Length: 286
Image (cartoon, rainbow, N blue to C red; front, side, top):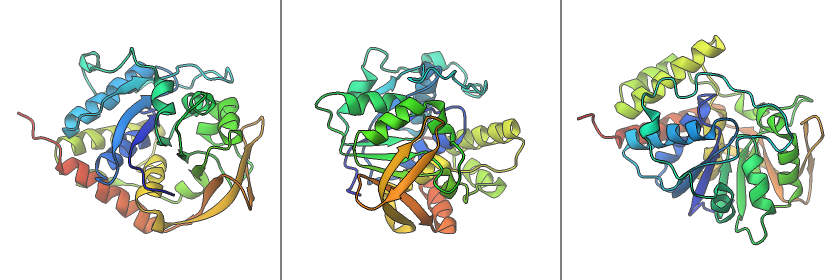
């Protein structure tokens, strides 16, 4: 995978806490140039405003942050957790680029990190003259016959993305589920300043929602495929998506790579380390 000189982050931030952790991981990775954020699936305006709030607390300027497609290409109803934005008051004060074309932003991006349903990305790779050179995707399950959330939420979009032939490196839930962030990590974040306190609160909220005492950092692991590829073992071939949303991988010649293995302990620690870098750069409250 080539270096991501300029990337757009396409996300359904706000439901599972892993999206906001992925954004923090990007902000804590100085080798990544985050040029834009686009949001997808459901109330994308709320999702965009949440991303803007995270950037504000982190002391970082991200321009543009663009609400994307709200409905799925497949027509599947949107799943909405109900807690999106609940911990962030006055979100309507956050400025986002509602007049900007999210598909145009993605189509002009050499690197796209996509960690939600692929509705926006499908349109972008179909746009004539798009400049996308590589996709970095969290989605799929390459060890079981189960449909993973990001894929099944918009099967038609996922199938279109992988059929497009655009180079994609993909980490599936079969590998990300080997990772866990628990109470010790939350305490470490919350001691690291305003951004860490925001992240810790979002983690605790999601744990309450999911009746758990930890969470899986699916999406931050996708970011590390760009920054720390040495922590992963990749296989090259071709990904296909059937009408039920089940992903299959055929090794050999093809435009796709999947994560076949990872160093779970080092991946989890590197995620924490990069998030703490982002926390260290967040301003103290006045």
